[in-house]
Every structure is written in C-alpha cells, then in structure tokens.
Image 1 (cartoon, rainbow, N blue to C red):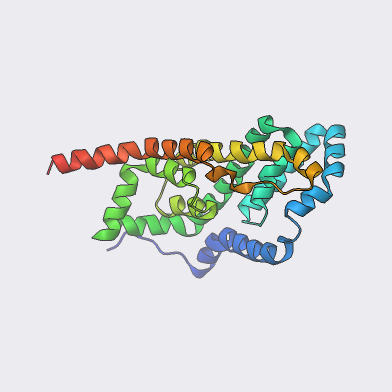
Image 2: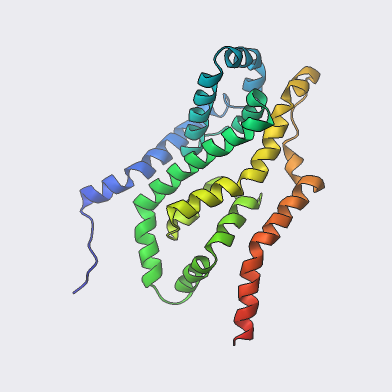
Length: 244
C-alpha cells in the first residue's frame, strides 16, 4: 500500500494559484508595460524622481524596493532599468544594497510559488526515480552551494531560470536566499554604478552602456568567481575518478 497521498482537484488548483498568478501578471505586463519601463521613461521623469527623493527620501526607498520586488516577482519587463534607477536615485551605495534586497525578495517569491505549486512533488519524483534523472538530482544535491552560486554568477543564465531551477530540485529556502543575495552582488554593483552615472549620460544625450558587464575588466573577475564556485565540483569529480 503506497504512503503517497494525492491532492484533490481543488487542493491542486489552490497549490498552483501563486504560480498561475505570476504567469498571468507576467504575460499582461509584457504587453502593457514594456514600452513604459524603459530607459526613456527614466530619462523623461528624472527631475520629478530626484525632487521626490529629496523631499521624501524614506518613502522613495520604500516605494522603490516595493516596485523592484513586484518587477522581479512577477517577471515584469524593466528589471535592468530598475537596477539603473537604484543607482541613479541612491548612488552605488546604498543603491546596490537596495537593489540586492529587492531582487532577492522578488526572486524568493517566485521560488516559493514554484516550489509550492510544482517543486516539492517534482523533487520527490526525481528522488524516487532511477537512472539519469536520479543521477542529475544527486549531482545537484552534492554540489548545491557551488551550483547555486554558478547560476547566479554566470551572466548567460537568465534570472528567471535561476529562480525556478532550485525550486524544482528541492533546494532549502535559506540556502537559496543566501546564494541569491551574494551571487547577484557583482552584477548588481556593476549596473548600479552605471545608474549612478546616468546624470552625466543624460546631459550628453546618450544611452548607458549596458554591455559594460562584458568588458574584460568586469567580466574577468566575475569569471574568476565562477571558477572559484566551480572548484569544489571539480575537486569532487577528480576524487571520484581516483576512487574508481
């Protein structure tokens, strides 16, 4: 007799509601906000934003963080612009800190929605499966810290993907939060510093260079961090071969 319980249709729907809500809002936001959360919107409203910040600093910080959380949690367009805005309004520091806090909270919301809706059951099935699927799950489990840091540090991994994959393989919440906050730090600092210099960019009538993260002086240190994160995986692999 199996110990596994099955959800009723009503329970199953309730379990998937947060993820469904995120997908619906993300779809609506993609078509309705993509033209309103761009660089031009920041440029055109910069004086009003700075005036509001100077008059209501604490409120500006709170509203900015809430808006950034919503953008990340619902996968709305404008995450990069939000990061630049953090630098534009609050300088590299504490702007980078505000960006990292908001992005981590928003990412955690997606993580919890995915795990509650699909992740827990998917992780159980992967754990009880055989063959390649089980080996992949075991490989991730054995190197969770390194893998979590890698998917955050590598610029080519989409942020949304890095939010979902850990939920589907049963990563503990606290480990996810720590690696997200620290793993996004290098990129957050780079883009926030770009945002901090937007005043001069606006004065020249130019657009910011968002490809700066791929400049050698920026990319090489990030790749060095990636190599450092991957080192424990490599050591385990070498030791495993020696033990054969």
